[in-house]
Length: 554
Ligand code: GTP
Ligand code: MG
Image: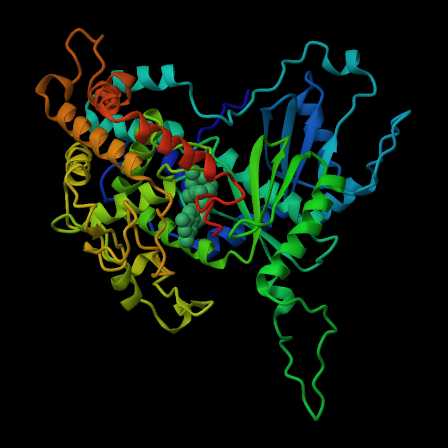
């Protein structure tokens, strides 16, 4: 049987992933020694998009012969890759070698007759396979092996951490266990591509592009799928310059502002997904948010999706994070760890509110790594100086230029261990002058806070904005208390090393335990009730409609 592959989905190609998989555990994940040329973000994204367009999603009967299934599908052309997964039923993701095979499969597919109900006919790439003779097909066949799409249970993760050799090994293990797998990455791109098919009913030349943690290399299994509707290709001038005296323009419908245009577009796409999108359920149109969005669940993939339009700056932020994540393997290990630590102590939440976001935590880690001596990561201003003419990028008047070719950036000479960095991270932010300083990855230095929000993290591209404006004083205090306590735990001799008896949580495992918050919960108890009520009100106030904290759409 085909083994379930847990590939490292990042960065770049499947071939690169396979090469890495062959290396001894951990070696591809530690240190900055991996010097294989790295692909540009846009190359990875266009390869993934093209791959997704040759791919189909099939809901299968629970007992199926893999061999016969593949033989049947191969009638439509050679298959490059496939995998099965479970999500309220058995599903197969099948990548054909050619796009034509998808059309061929669609041409022999029928619309179901549903008896009393009526179907809305839509030729999607999401199929349902029925067996003509179930008993005959499955006799004696083993059922297929499924690839896992969710993050490991806390217990399992905890045990793995306790078995690690040292703290560095713990951080690398955590990253390996939580990161998106090759299969999950494919499923994310396929989901965008399936949504694109629906949106194309209105806008034939549109693209649905994933952004955020699905593509920035910091995604954890189970994270949401952020996507945006890109209509730039429709708006672009034709390549052929108009000659002569005439200038042709499309007849368009005018609306008073860009925002209203986005709301109208998302409104119809939301309707379309709700009425015609196979597997799209719970469609919510959140059009009054600062950045309007449509939120829905894609049932078959299990992804919670957030669809926006015109989100080029967020895509650019994703590319920047991708670059930072690829420069040194310690970056991802530290980001995954800090995000997981924050989640374990309820510093972050899936509900928008006064809490810190994963995006802000990532920027804090990047900033901290820029402050090391020698720095582990370069500043954004430095990445701008490495840019050439074709990297130039201005979006809505904001200069978003930085070098896109990763191979032009010199690796850091810093050799600090992950253990030291984690300790120092907690110490650094446990003692940071949040009351007067702002975090700024553009310059890699603290700046005076331009406004009075408790936590000020400059938006890297829209520099007058604060990405953590939503964070309340009490949430910041909770972060600081936990950071101090975690630094203290890591400094304790006996907590930093595997316990001789093997039954005491140590290192990172000790940091993730709720008991770590004991001191903090004491601190919390000391807080007046009024503060706790204020905090609660703040989080209720910032529901999805008026939140500044949802998915970068502000
Ligand atoms: P997850 O928590 O794993 O979903 O991380 P994420 O990075 O995907 O965060 P989220 O879904 O909240 O936001 C998606 C993307 O929007 C981020 O990666 C950023 O690029 C961008 N983003 C998020 N928050 C902000 C913000 O406050 N300001 C700006 N400008 N962009 C943001
Ligand atoms: Mg996200």
